[in-house]
Image 1 (tube, rainbow, N blue to C red):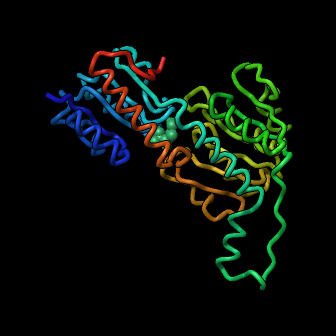
Image 2 (cartoon, rainbow, N blue to C red):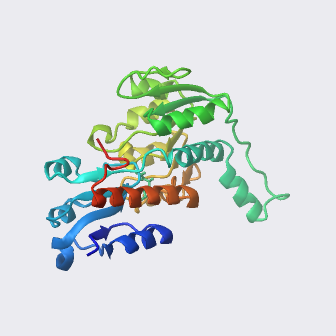
Image 3 (cartoon, rainbow, N blue to C red):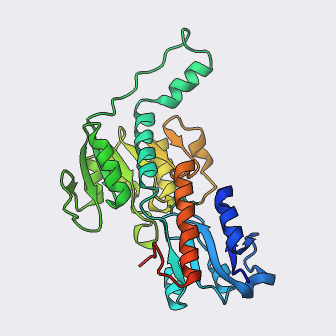
Length: 308
Ligand code: 8YV
């Protein structure tokens, strides 16, 4: 008998095929309690942003493993998983480059006003209207909030653009060529660009608040490739609207897939639908880790990338 698993977020066709060849896969239909198969589900495959609703976890008494197709664990109740001895795995390492690439793409897009330039050409304005001058990205002062794998990969790339690097984290990580700043507001004050690469969860909720936005200032750029919950989104909308903060480039939002409509029409925002890791290459590598972690679990072998 194949073990039964719940697929909470769709994955690439190849990956879903691999899952279906090893398991009876129940796509999650959004019900809090996946009733008729609830008692037999032993595994879950889900996305980092999507996680597992607590009501779903509670309705699966035979659950043994949650395999997250991502690195964020903030949408899974890890304490409850530990209490019930449910294993949790993520996909570290394989998405770092894509996420860091998007951070740099955001910086270049926002500083060089690429969206306005693109619209200008498409609207047939070239030769007719004028386009305001953009701003230099190279040589800027870059602040990074969260110096994990993604933060470090952003720093490596930014050095290629001659940027100076400073960062804030829970403690000084003694990183060569990157200055630790103990206060996030102070980091924002010292930066032209602030990239958020910190994990989500209660400990980081709304730490990028009005004070941080004011410190980054009317010429500052805020980039978020981490979690929407890190930013006080209401304060962000107000800061961008009032010119307290210059620009924002956002891949993640507080209440996905809902993006505050006020952000849609702003000229000083660049918006993406949570797709920093959404490339064919990376999603294949992530998906294979999900498949391999589940396989290891059901074969009684050590997990490849467990959450400790
Ligand atoms: C993915 C993510 O978009 O890694 C994470 O935690 O949020 C993203 O990489 C997601 O996991 C796929 O749903």
